[in-house]
Structures are given as structure tokens and as C-alpha cells.
Image (cartoon, rainbow, N blue to C red):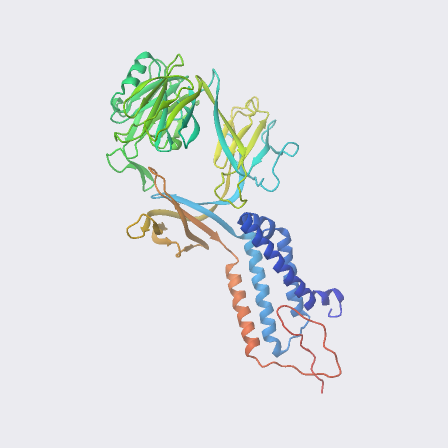
Length: 593
């Protein structure tokens, strides 16, 4: 075996030097990609590539052969053998980590529990009805779909999901188009401008208040002349706010204070009724339950049950200050064509607000926070009363349909992390609503299935999740500030696992069942609970790498302290053998006496 040329080459010092030089070049390229682009690019092109795995395997073969060719080993080669064994052990642990490791993120609110982490691996959610939804890998960044190179995914019989567009940095653009069957009600394109600012924003009567810079702007649908009169007079805001409902395209306003809690309240002659389940002036999550912390309207919310005469119903949770969080919590029967918003005007006289209204004839009206009000014409400038800003209604859609589109943007530097998230465009062949439909991560929709099927198709785009088996409950999140400032100096989370409390801080991770939980960051948005974000890592090869490092250090120590043993044989030339990390080629044969 020792005379085999291939084996001798694999054990040679020449190959070891070539591999070390190649490793230096590979790591240099990886460092460049990580600094110029991002860590995910470096992982895809280098660290996580099959090429790098093959390179590590070849390096391991060189180390193994360099040690094996000297077998049987002599006593003075103990350090040499230990060092090579340590390197092989480290490489083995690295391969275990590469193929079986896990890195993800866990986000929790106070009182919330969770065990599933989101991995940085995009997936498509495809399924039908209540059947199991499949997660299919959707990493399109490196080979984006395009015309002629679409990605096709067969669904149920006769339907196929087709992804034909991917933007890595996609900027959302929402517009409204005139549609007699539209469910969004009226919409306007509003322009705000002064000498330094010039921006446009679409508003619809169904989208609720929108925060624009220093103010809150809202569009309301005025259903009758009395509604217009009340709008222009600016009656005192209802004590508990009001519900704004859109039933079959017709607006209805109901004061929450007038709703009898627990009893049904008919909405005109529509056949729709609602029941106020509860009113929460200061909605917060405590002990995994949504409760009201006090009677002060800090974060008003209502829970409603909306039902029709056929027995179908939906239960909704509506937030006045966070309409994006409005969500149905339960339902039965057929879906109801009802849109609901909860409006709560602040009693703070310093609040900057601009409210616009549209009557059935398409006439526009405005009302400012200082009480001034009146009609407004298209493309006419009207002062807002703050920051020298003027507003202008550029376009009016009397009965609108929301149109969502995206355009790709390219950051000035590829490594910029502040760019918008990715988006995909998907159409469904064989469905009565083929699309195309745009998705950002976290979006899930339902579309009609094939002809003859009552179960809708479920389509979504998001991140792959994995269950850690560790149920973590966030009890408290703490932020420490620099003295005399509002600059965060430290932050930590008090969590509970299996009834035992743990503190996770920036430099104090928690280890449970092989998973390491690090305090990564947090998210703080006005009017919303603070989110604590944990990085979660599972490294099944870590113990193997620790053992390898110990053996490697032990081998180096033995080589350093053991007296070099070399027996010269003047009748033989040294063999051209070598290996990593031996620095010299030693003569292995002893004189036979």
C-alpha cells in the first residue's frame, strides 16, 4: 500500500501545501463575499456549497493518509499521530454541523410561549382546504424564475402553481382601480408637499387611519347628507370610539358605547348583525391572554361577532391604533362580505389629524384638527395647518379595488441590509382566480380550487420553521438605559422553561436540550408590545469539535515536550513523505542491529 503512487500522493507534503494555499484563497473569497454582499451569499457560494464540503473531505483524506502511511507508529510519533487525529476529529464535527446544524430566530411577546423557530430558508405553502399544507423550498435568489424559466408546482388535479417572478429587494406599490364590484369603497391618491417634502399616498375608506410623518390621515365614506353635516361640524368624538363597517359596499357607523355588550345589534336592513364580545381600553398580552391593563384608552381594541341570517358568523379582533393587526379569530359557515374597522379619535388637542370624506355623489370634504372644514376639489391645494404642508387630492376612485404590485430596487451597496424584503409573483393555472398574486414573506391567501371542488387552495410564502421541543415562555423583558439618556445600554429576557426561570442576556445564553438561545435584539413600536428576539442554534457537532480541539492541543504539547527521536541511517535517503501539520519529514526506519 505504501508503494501505491496515488496513496503516496494523497499522503504527500506537496498536496498538503497545495490544500493550505487553496484554503487561504477560498477563505479570502468568502470574506470578500460576506463584506461586499452578506453572510448568506458567502454561505451559499462557499461555506455551504458542495465544493467546500468536498474540499474539507479531501483535506481530511490528506491528513489521514499522512498518518496512515507511517503505520506502524513508533513511540516518538505519538504527538504527530495525536495532532492528525485531532484535526480529523474537528473536520468530522464540522461536517456533522454542516449537514445537521440549525440556526433560526424565535420572537416572543411578554406572556407568549413558543417552541418553533423560523429558519432563514424561504418556502412556499401549498395545500387545499383543511388538509395538510406542504412546505416546499423556495430559494429563488440564486436562480430567479422568469419568462421561459418558471417554477411549476402541481397542486390538486387540474391545478398548478407557477412562480414566474422573484425580486430580492421588492418595493410594494399599492394603487386602487375603479371597479363596480370592488369591496374597498372609495379611495383617493393624496399628495402632501411643501418646499422640502413632496410625497403621495393612497388612502381607502376600508384601510383606516394612516400615519404619515407627524400626523394621522384618514378617509371616510359619508353615506348621506346628515353624515356630511356631522362630518363638517366635527362632533365630539364618541367615548369608546366607533365601528366603521362596509356591508355590500355601503358604509355603516356604530358607536361602541351604544352597543349592548353580549347582545346582537342589527346593522340597518342588511340582514347582518353584530355582537360586542368585549371592549379593551388598554389591550396587552398577559399570560398568553389578551386583557385590558387599565381603563385608560392607551391601546383600544374590541372583539366582535358578526353574523348573518343564514347562520354564518365571524369573530373579529379590531385594534384602533394598529389596524394591520385586525384579524378574524373564529368563524363558521360561509365567509361574510363585511369589512370592519375600529376608529378611536384621541382626545389630545395637540394631535395632528387630517380627515377627508367622500359622499355618494363623489364630492370631497376635509376636516383639520383645528376644527376648520369644507369642500375640496381635485388637484386643489389646501393647507394642513402644520409644518407649512399642503395637501392635494390627485385622484379619486369612487368604488375601488385594491391592486398590489411590486418593483425591484437595487441598493447602492449589495450588502445594504436596509433594503425591502423579497417578493414573488405566483399564478394558479386551473383556478377561477388565477392571478397573478404577489406575495411577501408571511402572506397567505385562499383561492378557489378546480371546478367541482368546494375546498379552496391555500397559497403562501414564508420561512421554514422547525420545532425545538423547548417551550419557552417570555415572562418579562428588561431594558437598561445609559444614565440620563434614553439610549439602551443592555437588554435581557426573563423566560420560563418547564417551570424554571432563566435570564437570557446579550452575553448570557440559555442552553436547553442541545439548543442555545441567545438574546439577539428586540423590536419596540409605539402602541405595541415589545418583541424579544432570540437567536437559536443547534450544533450537534460541537462536542465532537471540542474533543478534536483537546486532542489537537494535546498532540502539539506532546510534540513540543517530547525529545525529538531520530535515528540516522546514512545508507538511505529520506523518504519524500509528509503531512499536515508535521513541519519536517522524519526518517521512520531504525537501524537493524
